[in-house]
Image (cartoon, rainbow, N blue to C red; front, side, top):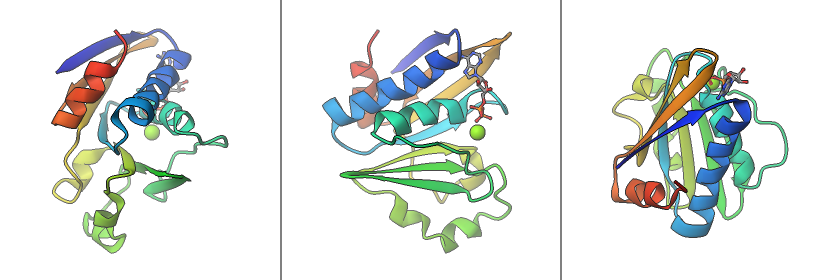
Length: 156
Ligand code: ADP
Ligand code: MG
């Protein structure tokens, strides 16, 4: 399944992330793995911020560019925001114990997933963000039955 939206401004990008969080908490009640694609500045971190906030986090959401991952303990959920842009060697992910990050109650949003190819859990959703002049378009493609359920439940 595939859904596409026009995102008129930053608030719309945040809002899509929050809407995904609502679907996970209310309808799916299971963790999801999301791969985020798009050029620098396309809105991957912005969308993730909406998700993290929607899952209940009230503080800042900073980009984990140097740390590779920012964990959010939002009981009963764990939310992991990965940014693999600076990952030099996929072995770093093995040293981090990457496999332990993917479990039933964990949601992982992963920027630059191609850098961790072969070591990450497969995605339930792939989100592609693109510039449309000053604004953005986004497409969400499901890659699993869980991803299908998420998209089917997402409004419009
Ligand atoms: P990425 O993580 O993909 O590199 P960021 O989310 O860090 O991108 O930055 C995206 C930038 O684009 C931010 O400055 C944000 O305010 C802006 N932005 C996000 N969504 C939109 C949108 N729908 N329209 C216009 N600007 C947006
Ligand atoms: Mg980013």
